[in-house]
Image (cartoon, rainbow, N blue to C red; front, side, top):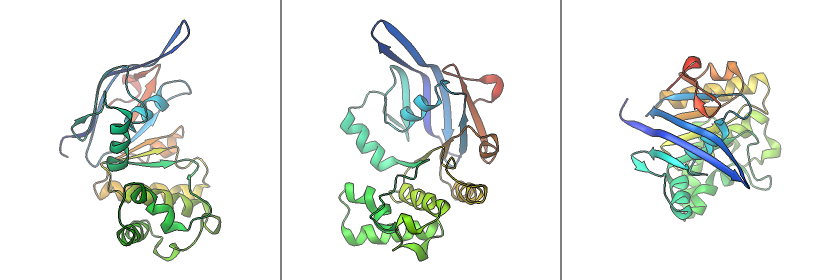
Length: 229
């Protein structure tokens, strides 16, 4: 492994609501290296969702530092954060977030469309991403014509199409049956084996067990007793 793809040092996030302050993260420090496959677990209200929002550059810390691929993103503007999200992070969500009116390759090409990539190149890269997740024969199928597991594979292909430094998966198996869950976890294992860096948030122990290691969050901190970075 090379240097860390992401590095957090004493990251804190405080939400202020009137006279009330809530510490969602109370000083998290961790590193994730290139090619690692890490699961993040924690009870409701533990801070894991806040952590993932910060890792995905959807939010910024109140204090502390967060470096992604060697770049300090802790104090970036929203425009700069949007650029980092588009270039360096691939997102996979529980609800797939596919547009029902578009076929598979058009769903996959969307991040490239937003980035201004020419049409022919978008089509080629989307087709390659779908081939990588085993859906080369489903390019022209709309989401409603695909199983839940196949829809999630399209979502993974969309996350891969920009060649990101980091893949963030938020409860990616939450809407899948056991067979589809096994298929998607197998895909993540293949991607990790090929050198992709994956952070997966889950509440399911068997899903977390598929990762190389588990980081447990409790009360806004990494739970050292339950598995640490």
